[in-house]
Image (cartoon, rainbow, N blue to C red):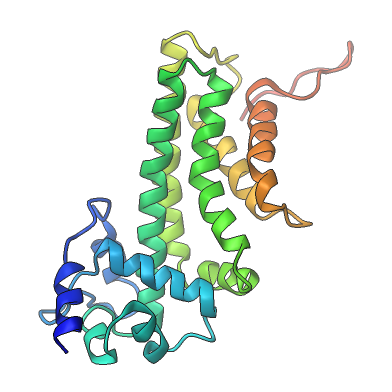
Length: 243
């Protein structure tokens, strides 16, 4: 019992990325996530929960098995999550927060190294969308977990998408201000950011599925198409007006 108490104390250190996570989740599964007896899960615990879902899938994972995988007693785990769906939502939201932060940092690093606009944006999308997808493709439960995420966590995914697209828009405006990119006037920075984010998500859902080692090249290809185009009009064609 002492071992589990030590683990519980250790995982009470909060992950700084959860700036709005408890608010988002409080309207989810239970409607009252942070009751007096509940403990906010820390980064280490959520990483173990995430790995447990990767190893067992959603349907194959019970709270008993999850507790063992996380090094907890079942009773101790219920101080963090009321049920499996709540644990799944916490793990997904935490992962999204983490990879967004890492993606933006990767973009800053690429820029500091003298990377081009295409290099910078590709690096950001590769970390934001590629890191999670490469991990997921190694799980035998890829299809099930992907479906469960859209079924149970759509609200969290939308919140994360909107926040990330806002950051992309700021980046595009900054790149233009720094004369690393010049928009042609047909589309706003917000529209370009939306197209890039939509493209990143589309790459992840491609059919046939993309091999884990090929994601980086596909993100770059998509970014180049969005940023610089892949076709020209014929001499007599009229360009449609951007809406």
